Amino acid sequence: MRILVTGGVGYIGSHTVIQLIEGGHDVLIVDNLSNSDIRVLDRIKTITNKSLIFCKADIKNLIPLCEIFDNFKPEAVVHFAGLKSVSESVENSILYYDNNVSGSITLLEVMTKYNCNKIVFSSSATVYGEPKYLPYDEYHPLNPINPYGRTKLMVEQVINDWCSENKERSSISLRYFNPAGAHFSNLIGENPLGKPNNLMPYMAKVAIGNLDTLEIFGNDYNTVDGTGARDYIHVVDLASAHLSALAYLNKINGPEAFNIGLGAATTVLELLKIFEQASGKKINYDIVNRRSGDLSVFWADITKAKNKLAWAPVFNVFDMCNDTWNWQRQNKEGFNP
Image 1 (cartoon, rainbow, N blue to C red):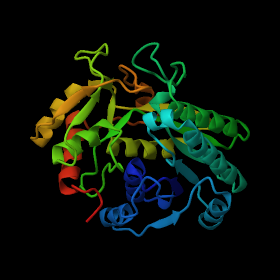
Image 2 (spheres, helix red, strand yellow):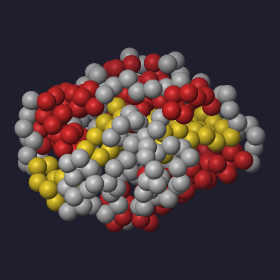
Image 3 (cartoon, rainbow, N blue to C red):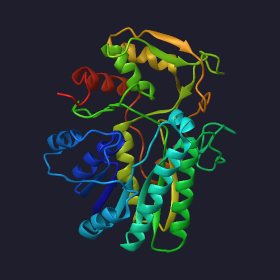
């Protein structure tokens, strides 16, 4: 298939592009590079030994997006492009609605114009909000508690309505839990700009010496050790879920949503100990105040993805820590040479 990947230079997008290429798909990457590094493209070429088609463009801009569709004629879209920090979304909500929602609407407008009827959307477990029960399944009430989660839910709803207009359209929203890890080549991994918002790259930067201390946001949650507990998923497993979703798109009409996680929760302090074992490094940390918008504990029920997508995670939390550390120690300054 000819697959257009928005945000394909980013962390999850780049790992998925590799698997799409290795799976025999023709891929075009669209990315505005606002939170990614152009040097990722050369690393994808090295891993896949394939040339890439890349267009620097913002999906909010209609004219260049139309030109891309007119030339490439994609059969499906995998949509990653968007901002992804919960804390930043609380501080600047309008920025998140403008990028995540407006950009997605423009993308769907162009897909409609060029009769591209299949999309896999990068959604988030934040659409669920405070748990009414655990683990979350796809039937759990949707009530996000922060602007980031609300933008993801709004895009899901827009896509659902878009599908209802035409019986030939199909969509899958993959509700990610917490991506972690890196590609086994150690050539690509999570490389946040500035201070990391996510725990795993934060730990890695402390372990390598780029940062002095890990800040743990709260130790008074109702968990085994007082720190927040999350469901982590290896980014390579997450990438493979997109290939399974693309295959399933050809079997359905209308929208579907799937949880993509490990199906178990790990606290911050538990993860820290596992990372210390994988890296052989002692990680200094301080307990600070909770962050606005953070939940105490959550994890996924992934039964639906196992049954319908024929997908299941392969890698465990130690694998995620080990691969993150291998990536970080061989790329101390990220993608800088």
